[in-house]
Amino acid sequence: MRDAVVTPEGDRIRWVELPGREPARVYVHGLGATSPAYFAATACHRSLIGHRSLLVDLMGHGLSDRPTHFDYTLESHADALAVALDEAGVAGAEVIAHSMGGSVAIVMAARHPRLVSRLVLADANLDPITPAPGAPGSGGIAAHSEQEFLRGGWEQVRDRAGAHWWATMRLAGREALYRSAVHLTRGTTPTMRELLMRLPVPRTFLFPEADGPFRGAEELRLSGVTVVPVAGCGHNMMLDNPDAFARVTAAALGS
Image 1 (cartoon, rainbow, N blue to C red):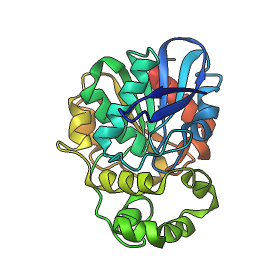
Image 2: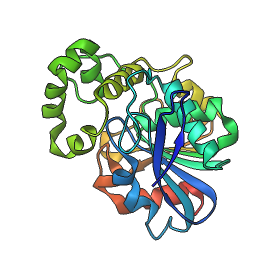
Image 3: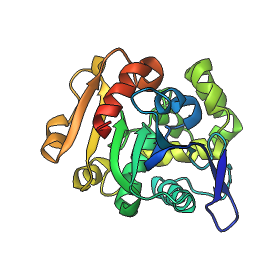
Image 4: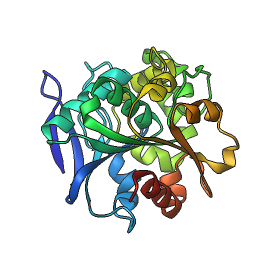
């Protein structure tokens, strides 16, 4: 485990690092997750092993600090991650990012282009989401006020999430989880989809094949984004079908 101070108050982002050749590969988890748990099998897969790999936990999640003064916008997440990568001596990384982590990676690539040479996005959030009580994921969390969530709304989220997701979600700070969800549903201006289409680096977007045609896929393809279905999985494709996920990721990276 390694770490870097990323805020003026001394808060630290932490990551698990595997040695290997450059360019480095940076793995970024989704909301309420943690990269070592979600990406260990991917980073060590026979088709991907051998590169320096950083399995990073975003601010407020997993091994990283959980400050309550941090606002947890997508921009703040991206800037904090950029500071950590600078401290780690990373530049021109191949970034593999899931769900909210994909949104953060897009924003980081737009704001800190020297850090990213290639993006592989696993079912990343590209558009704003309308919060709704009882909805899964960020939409259900953001339907609460922060006070409601901290006072007990998190228990409803825990029960809907189930034991598997809650195993990592419980490691996140509650303010971090709530604010991250709220800002993920709000998205960015321009939207993450628009930012992605403007990026000059090679980009691949992976989605579960069972979800059917991906909305806006043709528009993404016309902007140079490769859109690839992944068989035998749901949203957590690296856990549901790790071999298929690793193979399509390796293909996207040219490995």
